[in-house]
Length: 187
Image (cartoon, rainbow, N blue to C red; front, side, top):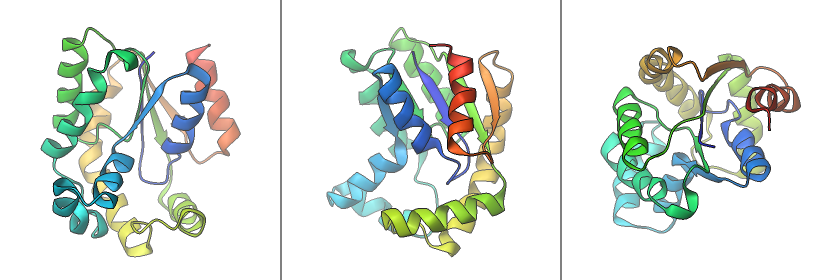
């Protein structure tokens, strides 16, 4: 089963992804995590993207698409992918569709975690304390949220026509969001 989880930064995509990975014996593809690892490992990509990420900007579609491709074509991960925060643009969504089709897979569910800005701010401020993430300061949070809303609205429109698209109220407690996802996937 392949699932897309999307929503603004701090919506709980990572939390739900980790749950689904355990429940479905799947693999999480978190573009944020992949990009942070590139920075941590001081790779050429990491050197290119560090300033953009710390400034709350999105990394180019080209870089993100290249990082995603190897996961999609890995035979061990076939039909066992949980996309956490990808795609974030229509270009990425179209790229994902092509890659999924070329690898003879499909997307089973698309979950949009819809969360209000004030809830996101509280969650990310808590996460900063717990996880000590460099991209979790208030100014960066607000930039990322605004940029997310600007770039991802077309993705929401792109996917909302899909019969497997489900919008979930992400303002709720983690367990309630998890129960709603479980009801949809029925596994």
